[in-house]
Image (cartoon, rainbow, N blue to C red; front, side, top):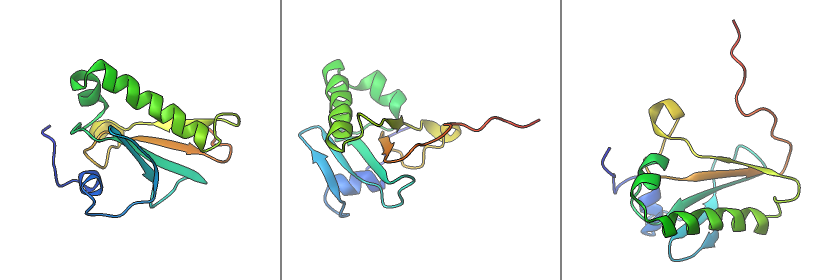
Length: 122
């Protein structure tokens, strides 16, 4: 899938849509989700044009990947989530539930989150 430079996260990166920034450096932007699913719900995105985790892990230089995930950990610590715990989620593609075609990681926390995936019922 080709990168769509008109996706909502690309517009946020260009400053066309405001956001509530939690963290920013030369390669990463993190901001509060507008529709939080937990008391803390932050989206962390790379500033490069990557569609999904598959695209990012295949095409980003290893040092960019390492710095991205180091930033995710730093953000969770700065939000005070490291001790009680938190969840990371990266949806990939249609079957994974990805809604925005720009790689992003959700950081959830602030309460016990329960099971990640409900068991199928027969």
